[in-house]
Length: 234
Image (cartoon, rainbow, N blue to C red; front, top):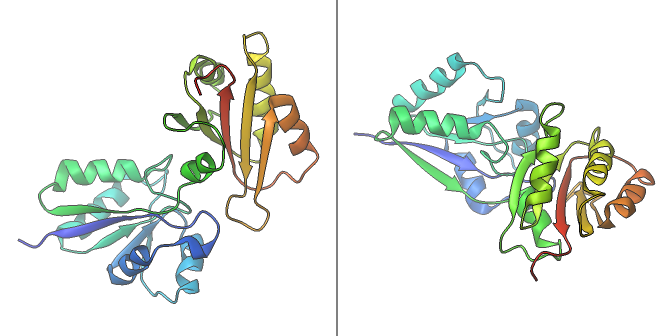
């Protein structure tokens, strides 16, 4: 019985040079590439002169699209799954597709991870905080359950990492400051902007200090925020 392969391929979070040789080989060998935004992935493929058909798969993809992908795998096609940036399945709809493949095609498809860039790890590596343990919380809820999110940060024993958009970064940091102001201990932040890109910036300090730095700079690109309470163990 022929076993299809579904490659979970990490792609650069900004700098095209960060892609691995193994990732490039996988993208060259597969029959089709699944991606969030075909326009974004096409730029990467053009840069490396890779010509492969693309099929969109993202957060709003229908069950019909998932069934289409499963059919391709049943037919013996080898596929690669990529996100717009970083590692698929991390704050990304890829995990749902992987779950469906495991449930329906576990003995017919080999799921192959191709490791590489991840904004979480990239930010953690330059934080200067003890990162042998940390809590990753993905993207902050836009409206509901924000207080629950902040409460979880305040109760965490280890550094907390989360993502935020440029449109909400200042609002989020100010809300976080207001939530934490009556709690014991000062909090230190490391906020990373545009990691691996031309205008990569890392802001460090207390919440007020970091807010002022961002207010005086260009608010552009995705942000990775690491929050650490000073009383954490060293």
